[in-house]
Every structure is written in structure tokens, then in C-alpha cells.
Length: 134
Image (cartoon, one colour):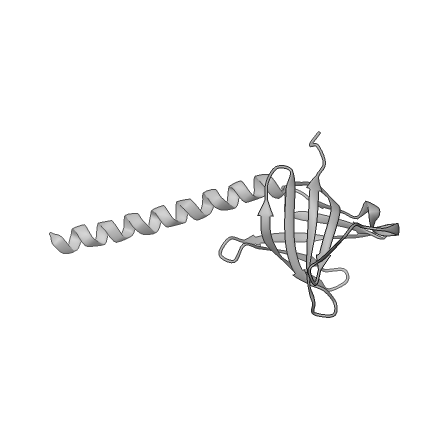
């Protein structure tokens, strides 16, 4: 009887952990699906505002896991996936064979802060603000 109770308890704990992870993933997806505009970025502790062609840099995450990134008036399209274990969203651009992991530092309905390694391998943070959903 004791072994059966322990097994049942273990199964219930595993099911509960899976449920919590599924809810966290759903909550994240409800937040990330939006149009995000670059507000500022940080590199080596220095915060800068976007200038020139970067003033309209935008990322749009769709519910169907497609993503569109607009930077310097150039558009890249791809797909995204979220890893709740390490709180990373990875964007894949198959056309250009690019993979871009972004560590989610903070996300809410209004702001998203992500950290990534730039082309030189240096850490950068992007501070994004959401545009109102239609």
C-alpha cells in the first residue's frame, strides 16, 4: 500500500509540473504575440537610442509562431520557438540560414527586454515597447 501511495504521489507531482510548464508557455505566448518596436539598446553598460535607419526597427511575433523582423528597412521572416526551461526565444530564418537566440530578461504587456550575442560575440540588450493591439 505504501509503495502504491508513493507512486501515485510521484505521478501527481509530475503531472502538476507539466501543467505549470504548459501554463507558463501559454502565458508567455499571450505576451510575446505582438508588434514590438526598438526603444533603446544597451551594450557594455552603455544605453543608446536607435538612430537613423534603426529608428523604426520592429519585431512582430504571430500566434502561428511566425516572426517578422524589420531592421534598417530590410525585412526578415522566419519562425520562433520558446524554451521555458532557459526562458529563451529562438528565431529561425530558413531563407538566410540564420538562428537568433534571445534570452528573455523581462516581458509584460507593454515592454520586453531581451539579451543576445551580436555578430562580434558581445552581449547586447534590446528594450522593446509594444504597439497597441488592434
